[in-house]
Image 1 (cartoon, rainbow, N blue to C red):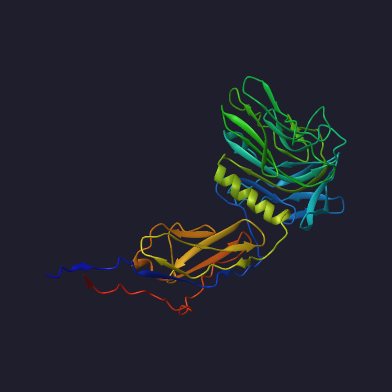
Image 2 (image 1 turned 90 degrees about the vertical axis):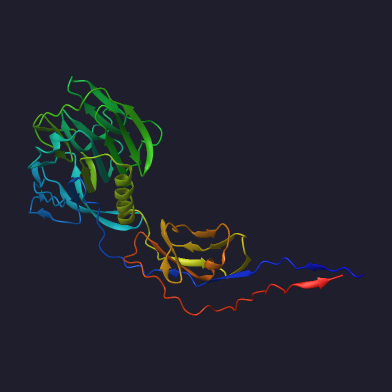
Length: 364
């Protein structure tokens, strides 16, 4: 008597995932602006600087605040000028060591408990006590009173204690070279100082800031109503926010870097994602490589619809299932891109070579 066993070859089906050409979004270098949330002061040298035969008499606040903080000539005469940055020539307001502008309205400054100051500018690093912005008693962001070219972030608390943050390494500025300076203050917490986005120093605070309410100087320190510690240098932009928030700092520094320091470059796809044919239950991964002005933003699509959370240079499927068989694409943009335009999915351009599961068979 012959005996037979029934067998079937175990062969999982193939799943086809098609990749479209990656789309580098159109890059349009239009007007970009900082975040307006908690924005208290925004002075930009390429916007609304009013001059007469003597120099700058008013620098208008662009923050959109219902209580604008226009900076008016107070002592001497600041001048409009131009400075060469790493990505080109930009407008600045120049201070020669004898001029100060004073904010015409500043009451809400002295209601701040937490704040962040952003300055894009340069200094003559042979001088000391040269300030971009300050109100004393209160705060000052400028150059050390004893070490030429070294950044200081000074504050005074309600008890009259002066707390001066003057980091060493990374806080000494080159002569007349533009920098992005960020100074943040958390009430009864920590104040921090950044140069070109890199943290150079922190200081634990004691007590609350002791505002005097006498004015805020631009290009010098408003010291109890008088000008002091005049700036020898330039200011391209100053922003003050009544908050300290890492997301805000990242966004504002991104805006300022894009405007002054990055060389604009469109997104270029250097390596396209490839078609895949994988066995069911095995992983699958698409990758794209790009060049241009970083950072980049990615969005992957499945059959033309965005995939939630798929925002990296690669997109992976841990275990491929029949429902994953689709056409995939990615749109890449950079911080200077004006819009995101996903590519419409065409017909897949490679055939899916599926391997059918063989029928049952009888074997002796």
